[in-house]
Length: 336
Image 1 (cartoon, rainbow, N blue to C red):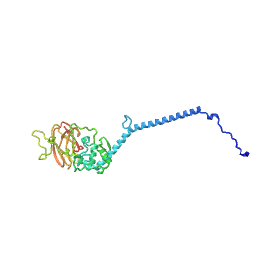
Image 2: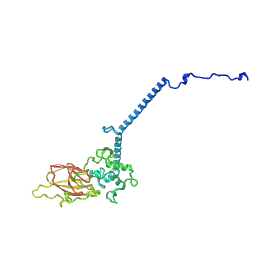
Image 3: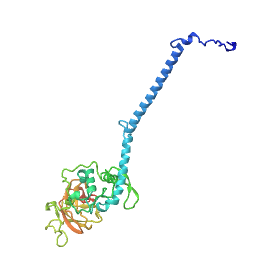
Image 4: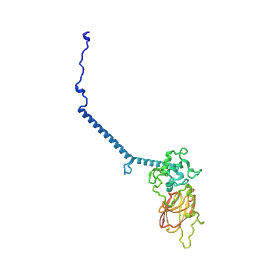
């Protein structure tokens, strides 16, 4: 064999015996322990921060115990309620006020701002039913002028219907910004419902049909619907003091007098003229204020007419008077 083709011997690579030692050096073990401890601290801090965030957001969302107004969720709900009521008010003025009155005082349609009705009758489900099927639901009257408002038959979608219900059920301690129907300018508005209203012990049930509220009471109500032939009250018996006659007129759903004085301990008469054609009115007298216990209730009269109420003697003090069909019509009677 040729010498230049002979294999060349090479030294094998080798390492020192320490490179093949099994186990960790003390330095490497210490380094691993330090790294593991640092990782645990990082994990602990991360978990702690997440826990603090969750706890903080919980109280931010639901509020701190004993701290009023600290709940974001409640505040958001309140803001949404105010928004719904404000929109419902504008929808009511645009679609409902021409029949029910801008203040719910009634007219072509029934009164809506009566506290007894708001307490025991005008609940959200009832209002929804009326808006869905129309006035025939109220009195079983197929010829009712109250149309269907909810879609698909009516013009209002479900959100608009809910907003009208929110307005009708809004409490009088809730204020919001609405459009004044008289001026068209923004104004501060409050609801009709008194959340603190309690049914008086002498209150009568709300009629099943709103038209029943206009039925004349019995003669025991203390009113006379026919004036004397001369148009003046009857003369007092000989030797008796003359009967005091108070003249009150209802026009444009308002009383022309709101502050009246009568003699205490003596019967008197109210000559009541209704100048609102087609709109029913009456006069009732209550202890202390118009919302007190009713001590006298005159007949409800409709159309342009004059009637005379014979009112029994009132003890000295202050009384309120109102139209029971339109409770926003009020005044004060002072007996002295």
